[in-house]
Length: 494
Ligand code: LFR
Image (cartoon, rainbow, N blue to C red; front, side, top):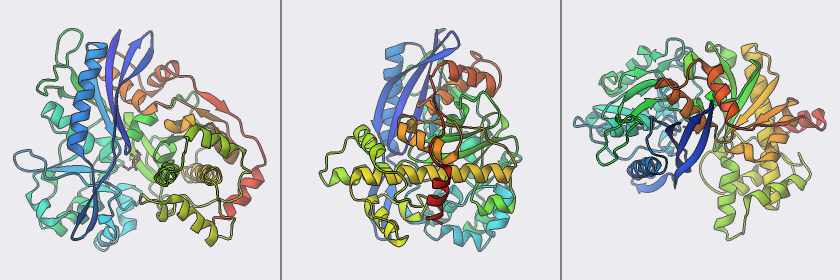
């Protein structure tokens, strides 16, 4: 028996999960769970949202200590987090302030400022990346010039935590592909993008960037003082650069048995798309804001960011702030009993991006499009799930059409798997069978890549996915209901 530890940090919580490999399957165990979330700070330029990365670091190290205490030796550790956000380091390797959260509105107007120097279509031909105001390249445009002038290093969040664990700096490519500075064909930095930044800042930014490594690269031994992690033979436990972008790790854990699958990695965001051998960089992909992010083993994640359970979670938070008693599983089952497709909204509307009162924003969208306004939490929840299913169906259709691929099955992984209503609605809206599970996809994808890196698993993605299949029990949902009804409802949101 051999055990690994996955550190999986999301926008609202972080976990340290151990996976014990035996008989070709991984047994998962949660060693630690801790809250996360942007911290709001007022500044003369407005409200700023930061990550409390020091607290995260403390929780991660304590979680790893607990993990090794609970399960004994650890053969490796891997870290994945959300994408795009970074810490700047000074010449002494010290952190220059708290990393900004991707939901901080300092980037308002930043893409447009960048496009004035490198037009959007030219940029897409270079980086194949969706335009989101939070892409690292646009965050750099919004960065305080004096802070940038002092910076000697830039590390994305998982690489920053990895640096603190090992003293070594790398840039893992799956996450680097969300910066906007990488070429998805060559998996290397794209000089034109770096040059555009350099002209803007009056300094070369490439010295800030650490060496690019592929998932599976062994970064080095974890040598944090007092942590004392060791392998079964008493060597220091190594840190493995897994797919450090959480979505890349989640896609590794798609238990697909056939090649014609689409996936939905369903958590705070829903990442909806296809696994491809090559990027798709044409004008139609750009117009659909489909992104080419990098996957494990040379793959490309051709996908769309759908706003995801964020809209629902923020609604729940709003109701609780109003002292309403909301039990999520009960709310989902009440939503299942509400008549479907009464009101649908475009969940990807920018109005739903910032934190806040989602029910009011939904009511406003309903008013604008001449649909009945939901009134009860169950009606709001049903509206959100119907609307998500429509967005999923659309994204899958677009990704398939534009890449010229057939899709015969949709896999859902991540926390959304536990929402049976959403899984069924996704089958109904897409007209395709949905295979839901594992819910701990990101941790599993993280763990199998570590296990292979240290020689305890072998093979390519099919072999890793066989381990995932053996470690979980996905559930299948078949499409039901009237497909034309979904088409008509989708028409109401344009
Ligand atoms: C999901 C995710 C998405 C990325 C978003 C912001 O957790 O990593 O893939 O677009 O967060 O970083």
